[in-house]
Image (cartoon, rainbow, N blue to C red; front, side, top):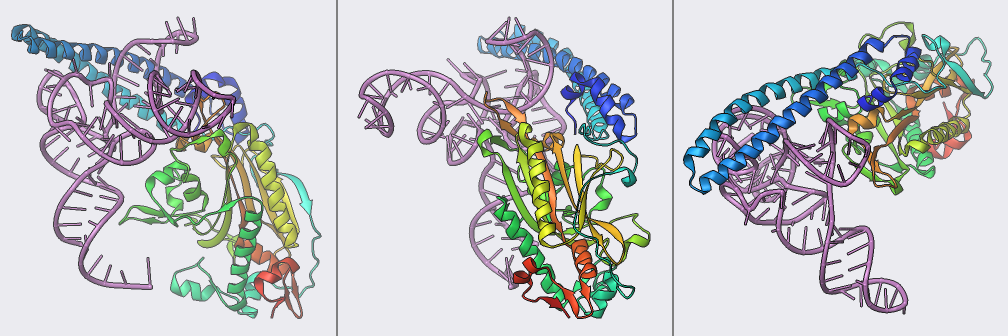
Length: 423
RNA sequence: GGAGAGGUGGCAGAGCGGUUUAAUGCGGCGGUCUUGAAAACCGUUGUCCGUGCAAGCGGACCGGGGGUUCGAAUCCCCCCCUCUCCGCCA
């Protein structure tokens, strides 16, 4: 959520920069200023009346003590009028504040200046590419066929137990999952991220904190009986660790990494590109979360991008990095880099990581602040990224590394898998 | 699931209708003393909103919401949460 003061002080540039999202937010932003003005006026008025009321009450108290009953009764009548007036004003104030908040929820984060203009993923800017695109022969199989051939992922069994999008990993497939999780966690810890294990269910307040609620409600699984949500990503519980927290400047950088399963309803998703591991309702992901000083957050973003690079390089997967254009940029993000690995049998790029700087957009809702050198409280910057999401990494590993003798594991992963080939 | 206790500032803990501008202690910060430190002593120390260049001023906040009252941390109602014991249990 953007800060009203920020909008007020930077109105023109906010309007201008939001245009990158292919929508004109000027009418909404104008409404924000209007409602804010109204709110402040109401607040001032109601405070003044309240002050008079407080003063009168004190006087009445004193009069009673001095036995001046009659004088006290006269003042009592007066407070009655004032009370009605403040009731009106505070009702109005509440209404205006609510209206203002609801409008603020509809305004996405202001894109960073480096964000390219564009409408869809077609317009994303490729900023880096690494590795050689493998050339497979005609007999090469997509990962869902390989999964069956080696009996490592059973989609049908998952469908029987739960439903589509909940695969069962078996044998070397299950082992590979565990290996990747450990590999990622070890690498992240080595890069200074401290490992945490958060709950996999979150309450309403946490959902609001990171912005899944109220608008993306339908994307999460909801347990009605206890009013809890299954996490769509570890970002939600881990970032919420710092909700309503005031950090000290010397606490920076805050770096956490967490492995969790992720649950997504993916309501409304359809099409040919959701086969196999491409899109699931439950999948595993290792996440990195950072809280930073505003002056350091873009440096931190670059560092995160560099770190994720090394993960994919060590897995020997060809990949590219794209800077998301305004049209593809997430609601809460100011700048996002997506990592995409090449899936050799499907012959397409698959997103395996998304690394973003949210600046103060999340922190504002979370009330995540720090004390600066002058002991002033300021909003911190939050960032996060996948390091990494498993299913599509597995898809690419299986497809790219298939040989007549089996699927070859990248060398650096072998101490984790305990085998060199899936066969 | 059953029974009970309780939610007050960074923490501990008092207050149970009007000198509460929330006592007191601990912690934090500043100072005196000291070569330095500790101890001791003195001072200071919550959050949010509005207003103001600022000093300041005003308002709200004692788990959340509503009510009674001229006046509520304190009384009443509803909700949430935590703890203890019992039951069940990895």
